[in-house]
Length: 302
Image: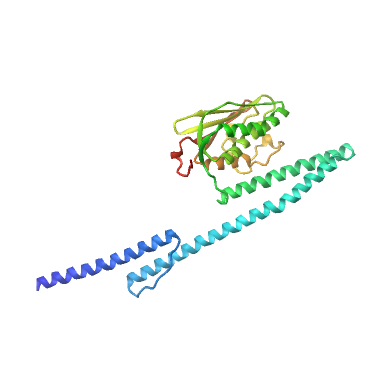
């Protein structure tokens, strides 16, 4: 009798183990299929374990549907951004063209002031729309950063070519130190971020210079953009990277408060980070830290 009970117990344990293993294997296969994005529900019997499998299958089906909905929403956002960019280019270009034509006509001093204001506000609108389109593409993953190992000097040379004349027109000096440093970064978008920092420095500096220097650390390359401008109050320094934030002290200056936010998004998207050090009346220094080694950022390309 005893040997029979032992055999029966062993059989029951084996059957339960087999059923549990089968269920776990099925669930594992379902998870793998869901992870690969090709999950589809199959037929199950009416046992309790199979009921659990069915509920799990319904959950995964809902998850797949959610992912598909998110992808569809991203496609809609992508189309909307493209439409906004396309539909606003022509009207803004026409506004600039006709305001320039008006400026060439004979008119009173008062009317010339109105035309100047029209040109200024149109350029501001153009900059705002361009910035919002870039930011939306980054935030929604439509436009992806492509970091790769490369030298920093070409980027700095392009910055000087773009902003050197603007500095000279304002009576300022744009100084850029030579460097042999390399880092893992996206050249186009890093130039966009650094350009925003340089533009800010030139905007809020009335006398002196804007200087770019590069330093190497074990894991990062540091790029400092330092100006001799109005500086930033300590209490405001944590706020300046917020979207559309503008200090009361610079309300009268041109700007929309998105340049620093966009710069930080670009740098952090490449595995780097930004810091600021500033004293009111003595200028500011914005520090950009980029990964130095390509191994530090898995997505870095050679």
